[in-house]
Length: 249
Length: 203
Image 1: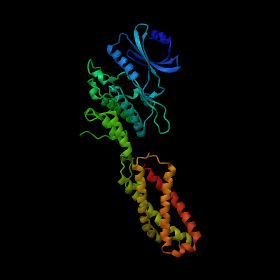
Image 2 (image 1 turned 180 degrees about the horizontal axis):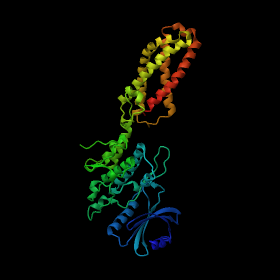
Image 3 (image 1 turned 45 degrees about the vertical axis):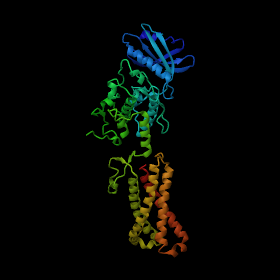
Image 4 (image 1 turned 90 degrees about the horizontal axis):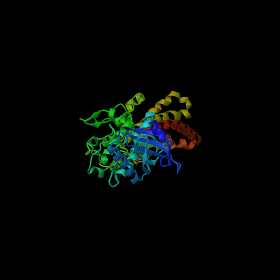
């Protein structure tokens, strides 16, 4: 890992100077970098073809790049660049996208922030507008991994909850992609609707994940911790009386 | 929020079909304000309402009208009775406790005042509540509405209670009349602020 970090001291393509690591998943790393040409901060996602590499990863990675390239929405990061890189022990591909200076809902919840009902509604409207945009693409773009850590929220001002952004299109599926070929099951446990476990994601699958996210915001509990009756998430009664849930049967 | 439950329906058939449909439904819900507001407690619980946990019930126009009517009527009885007791005391302080005899007469007039006031307040609140305006009404406007409506009715009852039985009285003692009126209006102003806050806490 040190050799990788050392290698990253040199700017990618003589242009992108790595500043710090933002995140890390198996085979995938995210960095904050400065674009030397524009002097703007950018996000670089790096997929390395190391021993953990699977072809599905590359498929999703390329799909993320293609999707971002095709989208143009103020609440979604902009595609900037895509190129191959030589790493110390392997090769890899890098996706460069615009940096959004905002914290994730997950980070804000963990820092102790709580959301009032009007704030949750503002968030819901903002996210539904983004989803509406994604689903209206031809073919529809399904995010498949909507959860608090993939939603960024800018500074609050007055009654306005803050600017909402949706990031990480690394699980995205276009409906055309399901027509043939293999099915890739992606998503995050707790936020995934039942149909997505079977690899069948439709635009309404994102709505389920959004609903689970909103429940997390109102209750502060991870959806996987919530009681489920007939597979249906139930908000615990003690949390907020106005969100009382009708018992099933 | 039933609306969130709709999103997490395990069955695709029961979930909204698209983000657009869900968005329209949420905006509709915000607009119609079937939203849940703090409900009022029955009058018999007035004295221990502080101790009771807040309940949340859907606010309907009937509920708003009924709450307004009940509260203003109670207020009317108290302030009408107080008017009838205090005004004679201002002019004839020597009658002392005998002035209390007049309390019931004022209270009866106060019922009328309270009912009329309640109808007015109920309509104003319903209008605000269901017209889809943002629920945050400026504090000053709340106070103005509360003070204005109560004072108008207080003055009306003052004139009715004193002016009708003794038409010559008001003409003969202009200064005393207005002094008494202003004193009472101020007194009512304070209580009406409390009542106004009471009404508008519902919004």
